Image 1 (cartoon, one colour):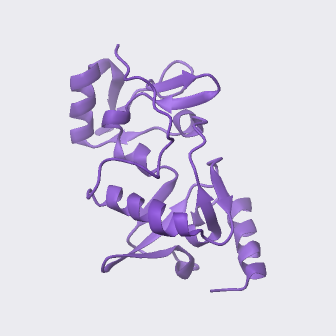
Image 2 (tube, one colour):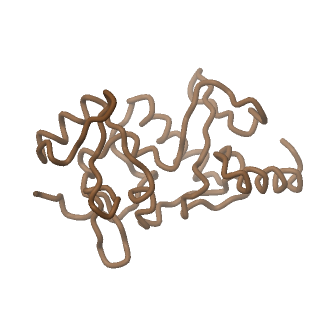
Length: 182
C-alpha cells in the first residue's frame, strides 16, 4: 500500500474528478438516512423485483423505458417510496427493497479499473472484486479502512451482490418506517 500522504493525494484526485472512490480510501460508512440517493438516482429493477413491487403496490409505482424496468419517481423527482420521518428519509420498500438500493453507495465490478486496481481489489472467497463508493454519499468517512468496513460491511455488500443474502444489517439505516400501503 502507498504512504498516507500519497493516498490523501489520490483521494483528493478522485473527489475532485467526481469519480468513484476505491474502498481502500474509505475508513467507514454508515447510512445517514438523508435520502439523497432516493433524490438523485433512478433505480433499475430486475424482472423479479418488478413483479414483487407491482404485486404489492400496483403498476402505477413502476415504469418501463427503453426495455428496462424502473421505480417511478414522484413530481418532485424523488422515489415514490421515499418516506419522511422528521429530518430522516427512509425507504418504504424495506421488505422488498431492490438490490440496487441495498448496494448503495457501493459499486462492485469484476473487472479491474485501468488505474490503481490495488485500491479497489477485494477478495471474497476465491473471487476477486473491485469495490468502489459513490462519493456523493454523506455517510462516507475517508481514511484507513476500519475493521467494521472490512469485516462487516464489505462482506455483506458482496453477499447481496452475489445473491447469497437478502437481509441487510450493516449496509442500511437502522431506522425503518412502517410498511407503506397505497
